[in-house]
Image (tube, rainbow, N blue to C red; front, side, top):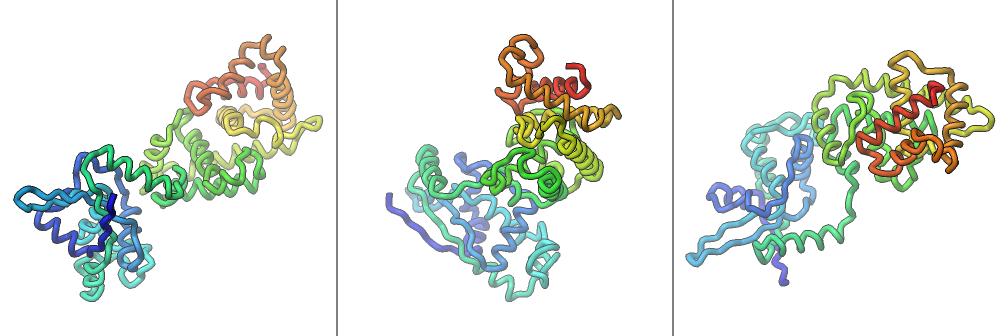
Length: 346
């Protein structure tokens, strides 16, 4: 395939749009929706004159010489530019461009407007409008690009109270419980998996037991990005339950080390957190030493094939911690059983 990279200005793209020869909705356009934070960040990038990813176009030339440019990738960037030009949103109030914070395009100095119109975008032309060919091109691009985890993408996309609370509580939990409770290896922490796990615990506090896919978690973040009414309530209860776990860990009976037990695993820790949360709400949490002793025996029994064979609830917990551990059903089972253990009923 012969590449045809090119450089075009914002003014060039706007001219195409004005002449109705820029198709932003071809059938193979990849689905993506930017929230306002993403739009603000990209417009700031343009105003600062910093480089942006390439725009991918398919150029369709008719037998009569009429040319239509189909946007294969880059719709959200171009749409953000057009909306800014149309004064649909201003420069962000927290922008690095302090002189222009809160200003709409129409109010910017003429010199700044000219620089904006002259901003250069790299354009890559794809050779075909065949969807399979396009997918193949982007597969190769993605294979040569360091992929961000879902949580790293949320960190880039969101900036509201929910994500800031999740990141703050993640740091606080590590200081309170140590790095191994719950156990999240350093490589995963660098990919913000600790923040993602704390997000699940925050949603457990707010909504009760649920199963969340990555898409569901994206939606939960989006719904709480601009405003989150339950922030204080969730933050307070999260800290309280975490402190209860800290006290249990400190009260380790007969050498029981919560931090090195299987309860440090994320599925098990989620279950412990959920059970203690429910008991806290019922004002029925036993003393830390009692809980520590009961958890120690519980962990010992889970490691015994004889105990598993003799007790259905132990086997149910063991199974629920292994398969589809993030689904609602297994989470309900595990939390209910750990709650009984803590109460001394199992």
